Image (cartoon, rainbow over all chains, first blue to last red; front, side, top):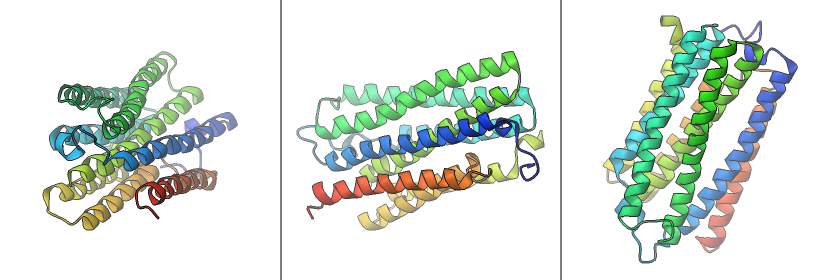
Length: 198
Length: 93
């Protein structure tokens, strides 16, 4: 790593510096968004009414697959940023594409999971528990969906313009977003699924 | 090819898989609620810190104190929100 002596491309201008810091501030607000969702989930998780409880509807296999897909995608986009700093545009685009494919796989499993929940009578309006569960999971899933479009646009732009201070900056910011989604998922995995199945 | 897989990030990935495996213990072992939750809190927060430092490069630039300060402050507010609400609505204190 060459960080002691010269800044990587994505930090190369003052504007780039501020863009990255600004995105960290946005991520701070995202932490709060998910914190409020977790708050309502923790308050409502036992209010199951006549609907099912978490232990009855959670299944370990799809949840574990989703977790591994997202963890791996977070690792792969890290490799993408590393390749970007080496100036290897092709490798970077490949890593970013793999990241998005893994993200798509994650989303597929999550949609399947949602359909399954509705099918077994655990829809959005069944109980306070299912409502807060599906809102929390859905907000995360919506973020992943948005990330897929955003990531695709980033890949197209890097392909077209190559690695410039601007595209490198955008790519780095996207990687921050993607890692953040993985962090949120770790908390969903631990404190919604595993806690519910304990 | 090898230069595309830096040791730091590969190790970070392996470590995050290990943390996931440890968290899974609460599902497969018959632990008490307190023991299980303790494991989950530790593995989740270590995992989050790992992502922050290894993958999000949080400490690399001159404004790292502003970045960490912002993130830790938000986590503090998040914790106050979550536990404050639990105090009021769940634990009845």
